[in-house]
Length: 338
Image (cartoon, rainbow, N blue to C red; front, side, top):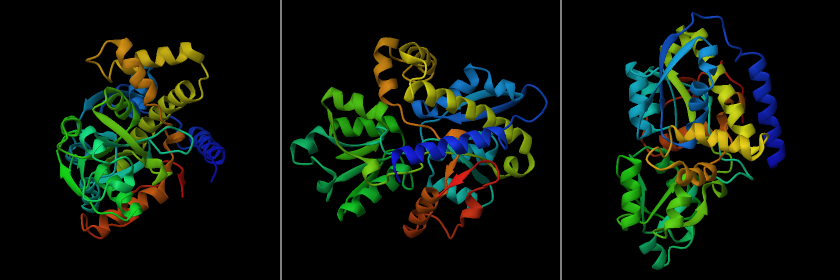
């Protein structure tokens, strides 16, 4: 499938969704909900939805709650501490879906041909010792937050494609993985470009490949909620997706299609900087935010083929039970592809 065909199809699905299932329902104003997020540019749709009042237009008063890994976010959804969230599919999320606690209801970030995506990284020590491409990953140590995380999935898929075996080291938090890679305690990792490129620019880490070469249409992150919200709170869920999708449209139009030119990009960078790289001055944060631009799924459309591939991998590794797609995904809210 060509870049233009896929992009065109996503745009059509986003437009159709916005005109039908994602139309903001008439619900009580200012209903308070909590939305889980990571401080990544890939979560910008949620930030935009808050900052530009798109959630408020849907009758929702959104509080953002930040996490440092995917698994704790899934637990927070199941416990009711968080109402909606965006993150990668993990073994913990699938296991909670198996127990009837969680449903994936849409898609967020995707790898797309022609858009700079997640990078495969090598520590400087490993690079100097010959790890200059994913083909040399055999016998190396690959970082991840937890077993059954998206990092585990990506690393395993790359290793399988290259016909090599490597070990995985769980380090719980993204910051800990970064520290271990920079110090040479692990040999390799994969991460979104807004983190990968500055690390590579520092010289402590080297980019040796692209995840899109191995998983070209990978549904990196999904939108999910509790099974109760999916089944019993349809209006609230549609309202959330409507606000989120408007944020997606603004982000794609501004950061990828450059509809507003440099002025639009700068305005969007200012907005995102309130949530991402907040410990850096704006001038130092801006290049990383811009480098991290990847297309978000219009209309929160979901690549179900990619989700099914991920589910099958988790099952094949014995990380989850015999969970079906119907248990994991509620397809009633957004368009699906694949």
